[in-house]
Image 1 (cartoon, rainbow, N blue to C red):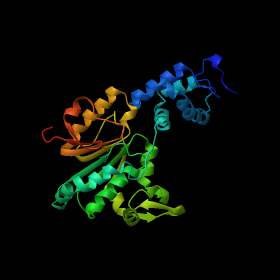
Image 2 (tube, rainbow, N blue to C red):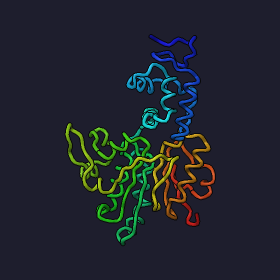
Image 3 (cartoon, rainbow, N blue to C red):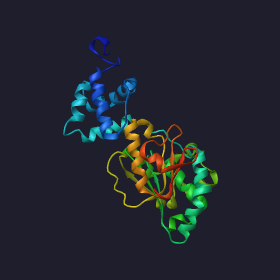
Length: 287
């Protein structure tokens, strides 16, 4: 049975989905993850969450809203966020960032690491791990002994399913094709089903953790490189500015921030982060 417009549904389908339902879900998603939804996304929200209603045996979006807003809705709020989060990623996406990391950033950091210094990188919206493993391959291309030094890459994402996939580190050969073959064939091992799994050196370099960018950040140290790409575009302007401002205190002087091709640093952080290339920023030494 399909819902009809006369019953106030924004989207025709199995369940009635009213403007009030959409508003409640949008407010919850914004409060939990900082993601801003326009009403133009109603069809997308319906299609992704209708699957959750079927799994839960619910009869309406009104019942679903009551669940996620209740005291027992914590787990489902996480599942809702995962369902509504776009996880588009690939190895060496926006390759100019990895060229810059290899050619400009890594020579200085590698010299410091070889002298016993500390090097930290952060993939702040790692999805299923293809970005942090691309970072790790780039580090190893300049510093093959990185896993034996004080060099680590933190990979975080709000979606626990993506974090688990990244920690597993298994990908198809087709997914790995954008990465330099000489690197991925060296640092990935053959796995079941024609897939390839991140090898020991990659696993030692990259640590996967669940983290909400608008929530608490438990990290104590500072980072020399941060990748935060194609995620703040889903935030409203105020939340974007807040995230950029939170990055600068956890960056070392001269650290590099890479952002998405549709993004730009705004707000107070813009006075501290200097453009040093295409969607590439460097923290001023006096920041």
